[in-house]
Image 1 (cartoon, rainbow, N blue to C red):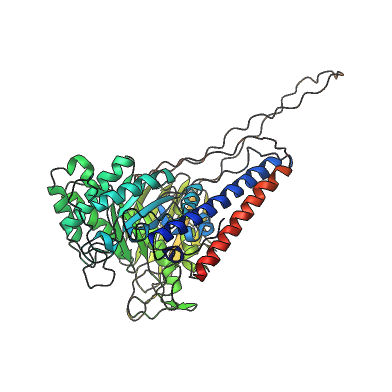
Image 2 (tube, rainbow, N blue to C red):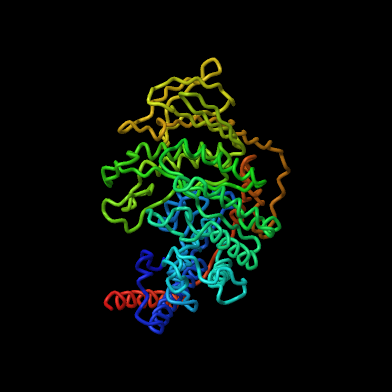
Length: 567
């Protein structure tokens, strides 16, 4: 891979004049393209010149990710995202960075195309988040101000937001971005931490409407997401927004100018279910039934010994963060959420003592929450239906899956309890902790007996339930029938040459069908099976030129970086 540096370094590439910036970006892009061109030729050449190798059609096929499980900004740690089998991520598209000084700017170094290519390779859906008005494009505050000309016709160049969104959609749709979140948490008022939009509800609706019409014109199959709503800053925001949207006579014919609702939910795990159900009830009041995404959820640990944070509210240790991840997904999907994303995979360039949400620490070491998310995805993926039972003491969420079921169980209070659950399916059974450790389990008289530890409370706060367990029942593997040996006549040997044996075609491996939840419309994931056996031959000498090209491009990148760092 070419050198990857944090976004802030790329952002700092803006120089003193537009002419210098254009030259800077051009040199960088040329060097990067030279590097990639040389590398790809070398890779192709190596593929061609490798010794004869047999690729076996019976090699195992890795199923595609379940698109319902996400991690924000997975591009910072692609190997870990692949290990988790994350199905979607969100990337920030700051208008103020892509067009920092005027409408003719076009800084493609803000969101690297390599990130998008990597997501596509890992079959990970990218959600682009559009926000942050540049100072030149608003009469209000930079970043949060309403774009100038928003009420003008969509094809008027003075409608700066329409022009920008059109350019973004045109450029990034061919690069695999077909989901767009329009702004972030517009309900947070001016003067409050996290404020990002200074306009009214009506102005946000206009912003969304313009975005929807422009993007759909460029990319008709694109999905437009309503801005993530944090709820607690303004519990009435969504209801007010839906009043405005449904009053627009043009809205119904245009899907009300958005495709999904979005929620941001943190710390108090049982509010995950409460808020999803409240949003569903609210939209039904207006005759809508949009998918509900939980775009952000987590309980950031302030009691991590390796990364302590001074935070007076919501004291959370590492175990509780892991338990939250499991419980939030169980409760969110049970309530009807279509997709859930952890905020976030890793925190980048965080100052010491800064609030760290990542399931990877800022040094990329893995917290228990990382393993909890891995266990969650592995044991819930491909679910087809969800049901829940709850008492004052316990929660049990059952996920039906193509080859069995998974139950997630935890205590709701601080009191340890014993739970008896019936056997639902005869076959293999496993009992796992939140982080995937195996525990002994055996049924007796058609029931399992589980001992659950109570919730861990800090300073009188019990925001997360007790340590959850995964009870996984799977059908026994279907035995492969042994073929019967049928005697055949041995032909008489002759002096003719024996023809090369043609291998019998191995049936294409068919993965378990991608689960389609009765609650959740799930994208159909497609993947390519391993090709049949082929043989490769070639010569290594043609690689010298492309190899030098790749090395030269890399040196150009390095020299460019050194020149920039010294300027």
